[in-house]
Amino acid sequence: MLKLLFQFSCLLLCVSAHAQRDTVIQISATGGLQYSKKRIVVKPNTRLTLVFQNKDDMAHNLVVTRPNSRLRVVEFALALGDKGAQQHYIPAIDDVLAHTTSVEPGNTDSVTVKVAEGGYPFVCTFPGHGSIMYGIIYATRDIKRLPAPDQDINLPNPTRTQEVVHQAHHPTASGHPFPMKLPAVYRTFMPDCGPAAIAVGLPGPNGGQSYVFDAGECRIRYAWSGGFVDNTEQWEGKGQLLTKVVGDIYFRDMGGFPWRVGNAIPKAQFKGYRLINRYPEFWYVINGVEVHELVKPLPTGRGLIRTFTFSPTKQSLSFINQPQPGIRLQSSIGRFQKETLTLPPGTRQVILTMMYEL
Image (cartoon, rainbow, N blue to C red):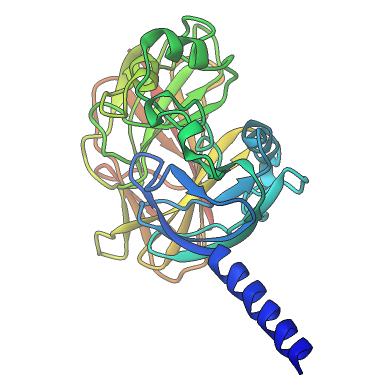
């Protein structure tokens, strides 16, 4: 009898010990490609559940990696290419310990992982996000040995000395933390654009062309030639400074959202993007119609080729062009009448070619 009582007491102690190691923490995605919590400290052998809520205006995920494996996971996620969206941008490699699915704005998912002693990075592996949207889980009993937050190289945009920042992010004076390969996509803060700006650099002669897509309004705000962007002040600050445009702006969209569904002015809802041969294809919904927009540069001269693909709809679609000096717009279907292009019912795709002729 005493032996049974002793065994039962030991069992209770073991269950209690495991229960104390179970920890649930709430974490959110916020504006500016940030997690609400960037450093989480628990005891070794904790079974940690992160309840991830997306409070941003675009989709994100949360991936927990093995120690010192964040950059490797991000690189493999980018290499998924066209398959990325189907796999929630999660590469099938051992360095991924646990992950959520793609979490749309306003939705929630959770991830559970057991962490031994050490540092476990977590990161959003959506294209262009992993370089600044990440954090670290420390499993340790000796909190005093952890670096101060402003000196922690496992945290994004730490407030460190200028020398340390340059060593970590600027091996060259290019304004980029890594060798630039075009096409390139940056989620950053751009001038004359909403907070959900996505800057895209396109290949081409004389520095190529670039444009900024406003994910909050689902439209191109402006385009320029002669370079991409300079993120120097972004990398050295806390996101409060604007990224600089490198080159000359030749197009500005001053007319607001250009598409109409029937006679209504729709409210566009951004759904994310996927990479097609490194070119981003933006997905958004307008009055129940799903739109995919793929943008490429003109082969010669300044201008953009915008391919729009629509889900099936019986409603009429029209595009409102706001004329500006030097810009000529051509459509693969129909013609503009008084700056309005009306598409035939059932149109599934249209290509708009924008040419700068000054």
